[in-house]
Image (tube, rainbow over all chains, first blue to last red; front, side, top):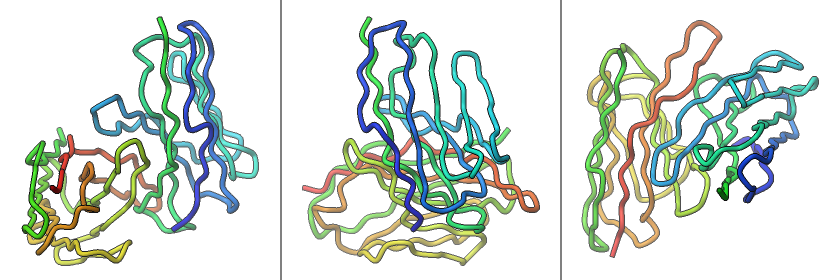
Length: 112
Length: 115
């Protein structure tokens, strides 16, 4: 399947600090999706980015899709303990719709 | 509203025993259905996906199989479990609208431990 590389694998921050996770692909992506999985839970869909250079915000979360549609990032401003979990990016293989291949995720720990 | 049900939540099975995990979706028609496996502390590995009744595509060769006997029912099976089959199994659905696909909705998952 298509490789979507995600870094870092782990991130530990103090509450109030910012956090960023990055996804990179060697091929152009038709779209990229982001999910959050709380400890012990299941992944929950956050957002989908489709357009080159797209930027979307959800409260303290900012999602970006690169101009070349080969990379994406999720940035959290002023983290809170409720942000704890693993954040995954996911993308379909080539132009095939439906299937998604997930990055390995970034596990975020927030210290109070 | 759309909901997805997955059971059981936890399962402990001996090596060599059979497996059957069921997933059902409500509130939508002709969904794409998926089975993923997540090893402890790892990412999600796509196992099977289905675009319709009786249509199953396998992503990874293994001793698991999947079936879709009804539009909104997806079953993951094994005739003989291996220790390496342990993991967190997640069912998900999505809908395609023309050329647009939308985010997956995951079930709550089954934690399988093979002993």
